[in-house]
Every structure is written in C-alpha cells, then in structure tokens.
Image (cartoon, rainbow, N blue to C red; front, side):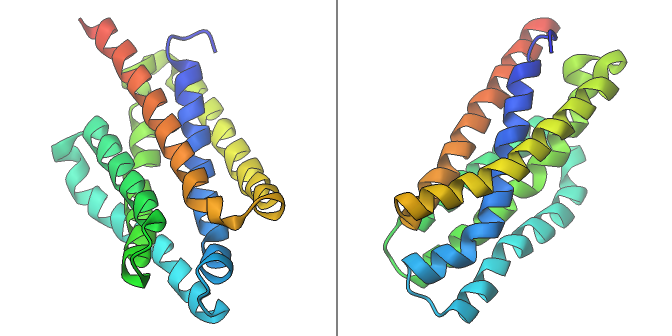
Length: 188
C-alpha cells in the first residue's frame, strides 16, 4: 500500500469492476423500467454489453502489443465514457444499444492491460503482491457497487444508471492517469 500509485491503481480496479458488474447486472432493468422496453427484449439487449466485452477482448488480443497497454486503457475508458453518454441521449433505441455495446468494448482492454502493466508500474519484485491486492480491490467493487446501485434505484430512480456508470469511468480515468504520471516521473 505504500508503493507510489498503489492506492490509485486499487481505486481504478475497484471502479473498473464496479462499472463492469453494475452495467451487466442492471442494464436489463434500466431498459425495461426506465426506457419502457419489454422485459424479454431488454434482457436480450443487455447481452450486447457482454458481446462488446467478448468481441473487444478478442480484438485487443491482436492489437495490444502494437498499441501498448496505456493506449489501450485510455481507448477503453474513452469508449466506456462515450457509451455512458449515449445511454443518456434521448434519441431512441439505436443509440442506447450502441451505448451498451461501447461500454462493453471499452471495458474489454482495461482489466487485462492494467494487470499487464503491474510489473512496469510497481517493479517485478512487487508485481505479484500488487496484483493480488488489485484482484481483491476488483472483487470488492464487483460485490458492493451493483447492490448499492440497487438501493439508489429503489430510493431515487433507476434513471441514474448512466450517471452512476459515468462516475466510475471518470474516477477510474483520474486514478489511472495518476499512476501514469507517477510512473513517468520514475522513468524520467
């Protein structure tokens, strides 16, 4: 925890898994309850998020070595942010579906690329330990934040879903950039 950037990267993993789990678990409910889409159709459309992650991870496997982990993480975060914005736009089903797919595509490179960067960011001697703590932080986000959104949706409105997701993308971006700056200072 005392390594420079450790708290930031743990927060980034927490936010990433909060984003992924909340998107996947609440997409169908958001589409049905907030957008008025038939529940069966909403469940099918929610699967587009997972299609985005799956196809994105396949594509990333071929291009990450050429583009680099940092670029892939930034690209993923940008796509995820764009997807959350599209969920907010009241312009019909097509943009909403594209939004879910883009969030999935955006999620695809983030987790594996951040894990792959651990030895570079924290040193080979610390990478095993930091990766274990990163996984723990990720699981905490996966476990807690979808449930917390359920409480938010129940007491406020499920219409906050895109903003809730956007919050995690923005905080994740800030934390990853903080780690990148720390690493750049170490290199220079």
